[in-house]
Length: 274
Ligand code: FES
Image 1: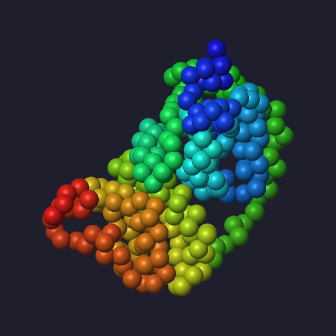
Image 2 (image 1 turned 90 degrees about the vertical axis):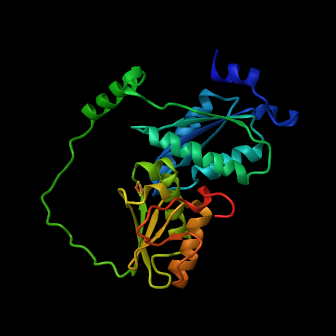
């Protein structure tokens, strides 16, 4: 039985009028920062749509690129699909990505007031399953048939020294990634473009780092030159830091953790009356 037969038989659309949209297929890629990779994703989606005509096929990016996974998922929800199959097109598909997506989807659900579909997250391509061997053979054959690259010796072009005053470091160590840092990174980079933060005010740059230290406060972000540590962030928290600290030079007290010489937990973990 095909995905369409199987799920169309058991899917639970939100209402009868939307029965044709019982299943959504959401292809998840890492990033597309230019028109060409975006166009390629459009083609992947068209191919998936052709193979699963009864489903509504969409795609989203976990890092840079629009639409984000969140935007694509919310659109499927708004269209009334009864079930969403999240299909990772990522190699490798790290277990931490699965955890990140799970946590972030749980947060998005809190903010979504409409009927919520069943969501299944695929396992991606894993070498031990042997599943990608045909694909792998095709990729190797395509490389073997490709024209040799024309590689000319050239001196490096040199680099501009950045003028931006602020450096925003988003931790992508293990605990922070498990707490959703990769998707926060996607959000941060989208905001950086949308709010022109490289130029606005004294300007900022951002990068992902390995562990910044206070893992129990994950996900963690640090703003330099003052080194302020923010913890327990979600998208709204990132926005608050960008507005307050970056655009108005006002650190956000509600989200920052100052050195005390003692171990600290997230304020939200300490319960009422802390
Ligand atoms: S992993 Fe992020 S602070 Fe340690």
